[in-house]
Length: 463
Image 1 (cartoon, rainbow, N blue to C red):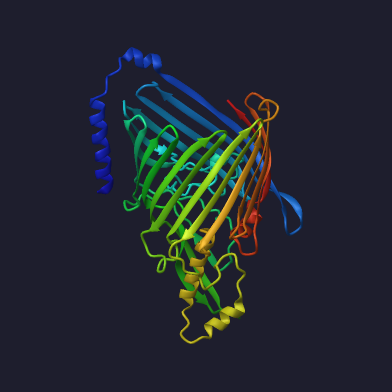
Image 2 (tube, rainbow, N blue to C red; image 1 turned 180 degrees about the horizontal axis):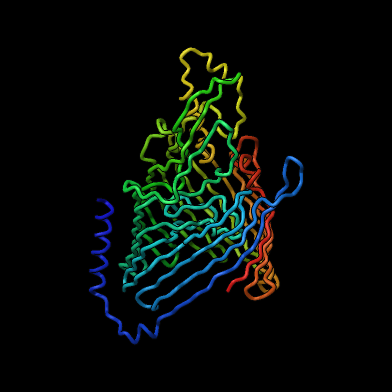
C-alpha cells in the first residue's frame, strides 16, 4: 500500500507539472533528437603468488564488453542504458554474466525531472567514503581497474523539483531490495559452516525504501541535508541453523548462516566549498537501525560517521586527502571472537560443553555477531581513518601515474593501490597496478588479503 500511495503521489505531481508545460512542436523535437551508441572492449587479469608454493598464479581473468545507449530530444526526455557482459574467471570461479548496470528514462519539465528504471544514485561529496550514500549497492570485490565499476544500479523512481534556481528537492523510492556484494564473500569458511546467499533482487513488498534530500547551492558553499528510511544496501549475517555433531572424537558445531538485510534510518548532511586552489568537502551521517542489535546479531549498533577531505592541484600534480571517523553511540564490547577468521579451538569448545547449562547456540550467535562487528568496523567505540591519493598528468595526458593509500589507525588495516595509465593512441588505455591489503592477525584486511591482493593489467579500447 505504501508503494502504491507513493507512486500515485509522484504520478499526480508529474501530471500536474506536465499540464503546465509548453508543448514542443514535432519539427523541433525531430531537430533536437540525439541517438548515441558508445562503449568499450576490455581484457585483463589479476595475479598474485600462491602462499603454498610461492608460485605466481592468475587469480582472475576477464574479457568485458560494455555498451552505452543514449537517446533523447535534448528538451523533454532522455533514455540511457549501460549494459555489461563479462566472460572469464573471478577468484578461480568461472564467470559468464550479462548485467544491465543502468537502464532508465528521464522526463524533464521546466522546474522538475522524473527518472524511472535501473539507476545509480550516489549521495555525498567526499572522494573515498560516503557515509550518507545508501541508495545504490556496491560490488565490494569487483575485479576491475575502474573503481566506478563497483557501483550497482537499483530499480527506483527519482523526482527532482527546483522551486528556485539554487534549491533542489529530491525524493527517491526503491520498491525492491538489491544487496551489495560483501567483501567477505570469497572468504573460505570451515567445513562445518555454510553461508546461504540471497537472490539478486528481493521483491518482497516489505523491502520498501525511501529517501529525501534538500540541496542548496550558494556562491560560497553548496550543502544538503538528507534522510533515508529503508533497507541498508550492506546486509548482515544471521545464524539460521545450529546443531552439534557428536559423531567424531571432538564435538563439531554445524552452523548455517544466511545473508540478512536490515532496516536502517540515516540522517545526513554534507557540504562543498573552495578556497583558492583548494577544494574542501565533508559529510556526516547518524545511522539508527530499526531492530535492536542486542537480540539480532546481523544488525549493527547505531553510529555516527563523518568524513572531511580536500583536493589541491598544482602544475601537473593533483592531491586528494581525506580523514574519516566513526563513533558507536551505544557501544557494547563483544565477549567472544568472530566465528570466521579465527581458527577454531576444539579444546576450548570441549571445555565449554562441559559447563553445566552452557548454551552453545547462544555462544555461536555471539560469535556471528562479533563477525558482523568485524566487517562493520564496530569492535571498538571509535575508528579513525586517513587516505591520500597522489596523481600526475604527464606527456600531455598520455601518462597518468597515481598512488592511493588508506590507513585505519584503529584496526591498523592498510590499503595501497599504485597504478599507471598509458594512453598511446586515441581510445586505447593500458592500465597496470596493484591492490595490496594488509592488517594485523584477525583484522578484516588480514582475512581478505589472500584473495583480494593482486597485481593487475588491462587493455581497454573505447568506441
